[in-house]
Image 1 (cartoon, one colour):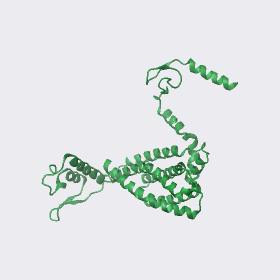
Image 2 (cartoon, one colour):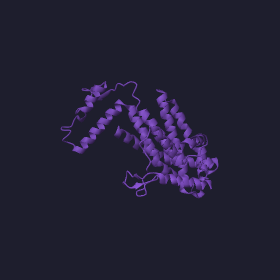
Image 3 (tube, one colour):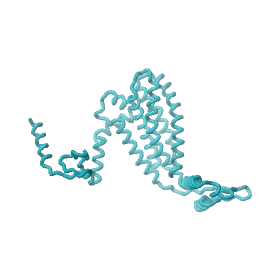
Image 4 (cartoon, helix red, strand yellow):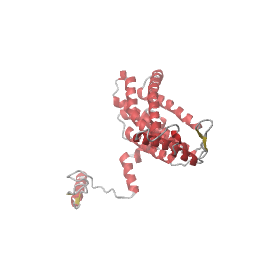
Length: 312
């Protein structure tokens, strides 16, 4: 009876609303959505705190993030097992958590890229033969040399010998070389940004490799993909920690090797828990997977380095 009264009151409240013009199609309507085009009547012109609250509601972060992060860090493979077992209510879904980690990584990488170099290094560069060398000792000299035609030494007519497109490409490479030499941190941080894109592309490939390795277990591809997403979320988390430490601890990179030692340990425990095989079989399959994936990862990292050098 109370439910009927509540529904009736809600219906009366909607009917009591004055018709509003849809900003998309102009149709006059009441309620939350336009009955003509389906666009929401929700007001997006509101304070930033309300927008952030809406984002938290969309991702359900306000209730689920704490329950998700603890097993994610300390129980590898647990969230994947829980998700496939149907116990999904109290945890963030793998996709939502990956998006959350991507956003965290993006903001940390952007913050790291905004940190100026503490001291501009003196760059020494030599051009020409032994009898006639040009020594570059500061940034202004480097700009002057890279901006001149000195790099085309031995060419009768640098512009005439190249078509316009090739010349523009060489100019871009020369400008990027100047930026990279003057700001190595910018190059490194651009490289970190492209890593997140590479991980996103490699996730389904990683799941396919798992499918082939566990083909006798008769598991669906989606199960391997869920495990892959959670493992790559951990990779993003580790990279976020790495960049954060670079912001806090400057001039000391001893922690880098320690952080990357965590990856095989985390992954071994995760595979053992999720696929429920003996430690020997898990290690053998992990070795095969690591070998193939490393080749793909190195190729993608080289691509990331090239892209980072291109866009700086």
